[in-house]
Length: 164
Image 1 (cartoon, helix red, strand yellow):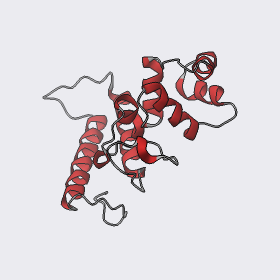
Image 2 (tube, helix red, strand yellow):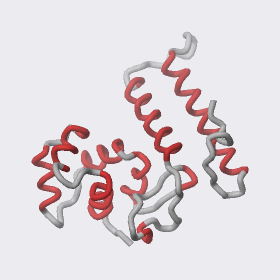
Image 3 (tube, one colour):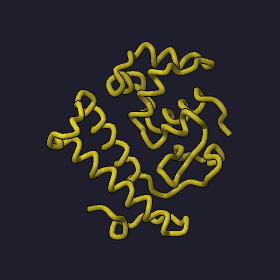
Image 4 (cartoon, one colour):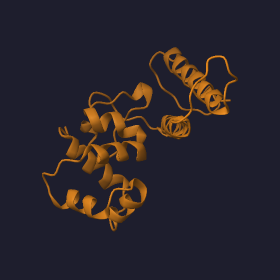
């Protein structure tokens, strides 16, 4: 089992980032300098910074919980990367699909960025961003209810999921 945040980040990047030019690829996607990423890759015992952990969590939201804690919670879409050794996915086994959860996390992050400066007025009309957030929250509640109604058996069939 992978025990450190550094090892978990290295596994994610070894499977998700390109083999050649990984530092440049990450610089473009995370706004962290290529040199910082190169330093992380070349120093075996280097710990990732909080900024690196946050940026990788945003880039691969389905791995965020596992990256930070070493645990998975696949019922709610928190998984670990696929590799030959699934023992790092403690305590659960791999799901075949993660698309629905990843899409949900990405939409929530986009909405968070859009609404970070929005002030909520209790008596005023709802903004389109808040309406979208409510729609996503309702969708997530339906998804959780659906997953729970399946007696813990998660199946991914686009016709059965409660998406509008």
